[in-house]
Structure formats: structure tokens, C-alpha cells
Length: 405
Picture (cartoon, rainbow, N blue to C red):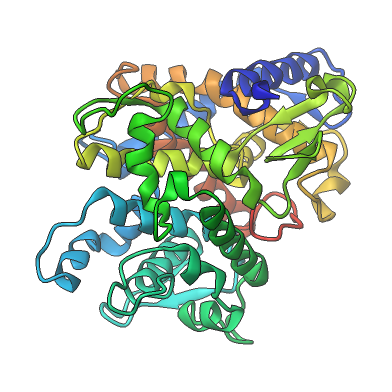
């Protein structure tokens, strides 16, 4: 079972499906390796355009909190009369915001009262969730609004979240009910694990727990933590929250799906693990850990994120082509073999794309880890192509409840 929570498994099985597709054995995709160079060039150009000094931050939820050129993190200090925010508060914020970060749909937008800015998609979700957090929506204690605790999450209503995100009939948000259910499940998971999340159970308390998890004695805040260890902790404690995730041998395994080419689905060998939102969350926790004096190492053990921006980049850039064009007109569920394979090919091809992008920019792995290539980068280039070709929508409809894509 442990192999389903290891990114080495994700990579090896993704590469196996890519090798199979290159051999012409995929029922769904053909691979055009000659297009990789042009896609790498597009990603490099996009990166230079967004970050001319090549000082590229991590692909992280914190970038969305900076939408419109605003440093919203500084606003937290205003709420607490200048007291700096600790890791627990910052992690509370970013975890709940990431879990609310699934496809918003093409129609939804959020108008920020303080700036008058209007944001949509991921930026809008980031800004909306930031203000919901600041208002105390996820806290059970009105005297301590800047926290996310079990009781606050378990009592969250759909109407409350709809109001916080300015949802109306004319401003619909895809997967609203799914988002609320996910946060309620998070609250239940926190309440069930006080040894990790403390009393009252706060999601940010995983910071302190993570520093001693698997070790015989407490470590100081200046010690480092491996990115994969952080991901493993998230998977161990939060895999149970995914309502649309898979179950194997009576255990919730989250964002893992069977693919017949990998083996029998009654064994773990037949499953393709992704853990996209858990990895996105791990990327988004890098900065709170580092700001709090705990460097995160081994960033490239994480994988590229298999979602519709990165996957769309490969399709729209011509690296992948559909064998059946009619698949673009049909809504697909994450459990479909077609989607599982698309996501696996995305993971494997991103690993091949990354060194080409670094070469184009003249940067090393140390200067531009995968987290920075994604930010520079592949996600933004995928959005550019999607906007040019389809007004920003995914390459095909996805039947999502707001917890996978």
C-alpha cells in the first residue's frame, strides 16, 4: 500500500504509460516528441516575460494571494495590530485555500472590496479564500478569526461559503457543494487526529508535528524537512478527506485510479497514483516552512502537477494528440482510463520538458527546481494556449466535483 503514496511510484508508472504510448499501444493518445522543443521554447519565453530577472518563485498558492500586484500577506499583520504571523496561522490559511482551489468555471468572478480589483479562476479563488479566512469563516472562536479549526470547518454551510465567494445565479461557482463537503471532511479528519492537530484541532498544527514525525526527539525550528516527508504526512493524515477519491483494501487512497495497462486493479500494481491537490498543497507549504526557519529539501522528488493547465499545454502544444477527436466533446470523469492516462503522460512528459526549459534559460536545477519551472512556466504557458484556442477552458469538459481538478 505504501507505494501508492510514493512519488517514485507515480513517476515509474507514468513513464511506463508514456513508453507504451510511444510504441503506439495507447488507445487514446499519440506522442509527438518533435514538438517538445517548441513547447519548451514557449515555456521559456513565458517565464522570461513573467520574471525578466529569472528570480522565479515557487508555484504556490501564495502567488494567487499576490494577484493584481498586492501583498495581501501584509494585511494579516494589520488584523493582529502588527504582530507577525507564525507558521500555524500561515499554514491554516494556505491549506484551506488550496482545498478550495479547483476549477471555478468560466463564469465566476470575485470583486475585492478593498482594491476594487476583479479576479476570476485560480486568482479569484485565492483572493476570495484569503478574505474568507480573514473574516473568521473557518474559525469556531470569533475572538480568534485567523485560524482554521475542526469545529469551524464542520459547521460551515454552503450558504456561508456562497456568500463569502459572492456566488449568485448570475455568478455561479462550479463544485460549490463539493468544496463545502471537502472542508467539512477536513474538519472531521482534524477532530479524529488530535495527536497531530492538537487541541483545539487546527490544521496549522501539523507544522510542529511534522518536525518530530518519525524522529525520536523534537527538532529545532532551524532543522530542514524533506518535501517528500511533508507530502507523506499530508497523505497519511488527510487522504480520508477526498470524497471523490479511491478506496483500496478498505483504505482511502485519494487521487489514485486504476489503469488496465498497469495490471490488475485488485492489486496495487494496477493503480496510478497522482495526489495532485496534496502535492499542490505541499508546494504551497514550502514558503510558510521556510519563512518560519525550516528549509524544505528535495523539492524535485515531487512531480509536476497533472491538471488541465499542464496537461492542456501538452495537448495544445502538439506533444500529445488524441486518436479520437470526439473525446474533446464529451465530459469526462477523473476515474476514466482516458483521463488517468492523460494525467500520467503529463507527469512523465513534464519531467522531460523541465531540463529543456532550464537549458533554454541557462539555469541549473538548483537555480530552477521543478516548483519554479511550473510557476515560470508550464502552468502559465498552458493557460496562454487555452486562452488563445478556447477562451481559457480545458481541452475537453471535465465532470469534477471540485476536489480533483
